[in-house]
Image (cartoon, rainbow, N blue to C red; front, side, top):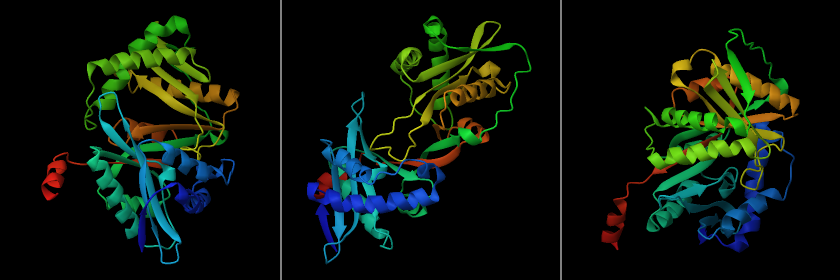
Length: 334
């Protein structure tokens, strides 16, 4: 077995492995299968990852120079200066029938490289149907963090009716900016509470307010607000899903549910369902085929609510956090 650092000359061979992985996923995953097949996309996906200035990767060959597996990732630096390592769907593949330990070995090399660059948070995107890759990364101490799900709108029956006569649903315009900003803080409170336990610095709320209000005026977006007694009590919104070389498995005619929350005093009264079904009707009128969203698996509200609305998982985001004290161990060994 021959191990090499990933370089430009490996892209072609790696794209063949990724293509085989993708074709298999299309057979198993109905959502993947709806996308227009393009044989060139896997190679472009790998090229994009490789061309990132922080990319790094490794690959393994047999004695006849046949590539058996590769892994390729890059890291980003967030606004707080934290470095986050990403392995996208196009960033790894194992030749069918080969030993899964090869992929575990390749991650150990990439992970070691990332740690030397102070990258301690590692993420990998794994399709719902890929039992072999889920097992590989679970046995590398990764864990489930985020679920990505979809609804096929062509098969979705909308039966909910507004029976209380007190709730009004409006499509937000610039005149509702203040209400949208008010509802933005409510989202963060339940996204970071127990047992998710994510920090939420004060400045994050300001960024959320700005982000929510910008949705009103953006192209291919829509925001709906629920009012009771002329007071805003809930919100939902979507934008057109981005189909690029990192997300080439997303069908073209898809939208992403980006915003959804109800103020605490109005929960379990049908507000979120009313907003959701009104959004479904709007999407159908605009001839969209798929609605996608994602949620934290530790979020007790979201992980029950969205599957109950019919979302079917198609992708998982796995996460591993490395104890930063390991850097001192590495120094002592060298």
